[in-house]
Amino acid sequence: VRSQMWPEEILSVLEHYGLLNSLPTSVREVLDRPNPRWKENKDECDTSGHVLNVVIGSNSVALKSAGLRARELGFRPVVLSPAVCGDVRFVSRLYGLLAHFACSRKEPPPEIVAELLKLGPEVGVESWDLCRTMQVLGEARTEGWGATCLLAGGEPTVELRGKGRGGRNQELAMRVGLELRDLELPPSGPVFLSGGTDGQDGPTDAAGAITDGGLYDEAQAQGLDINNSLINNDSYTFFLVSLL
Image (cartoon, rainbow, N blue to C red):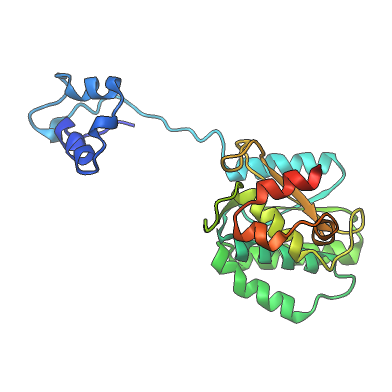
């Protein structure tokens, strides 16, 4: 992207933040190089070139592709939002409530709907999107659609308090697994997948994790402490050990 800043301005910013010494040699050479395109008057800077920015990948694009694939696999895709964000604890609660809403055999309790509408704005989901999603999930329940695939994109925030290994997707999967604890197990109950579209979740070799309502009991049976893993931000180790 073309910039109209003077090289001296760029260097002063880098110097202010103590980054001059860490500059790659090639970048420093460009900034130090006399360039005829730098006019005496910055307003006359050469802007004749045209810059075209093209977005070739985004959450919306990923969700559209995921929806097409879900339909090919026999699921009915429902897209919640491409911009779910905020504290991972609130995001996991949102997904847990939506799972309970979708899996209710009867009309879901009004307190679930109320909590969803209250929680939505805190995690970047508009009330309109929540109402639309709940309406579609309700139709799926009454009309007997069969398997539904609820899709969402975004970037939850994880507060690092421990020294374990993990990533936002793996921690989200752990927390949602706890939210699903009182629901049926697959194939009748829900399965939750959280993964990074770039194929890497945090400083690990995993893209994310898959979980369901049996997570807590399985961890207990293996002597694993989920709460301790969450406190230590050690979701990667938790899932790695649980698979052994």
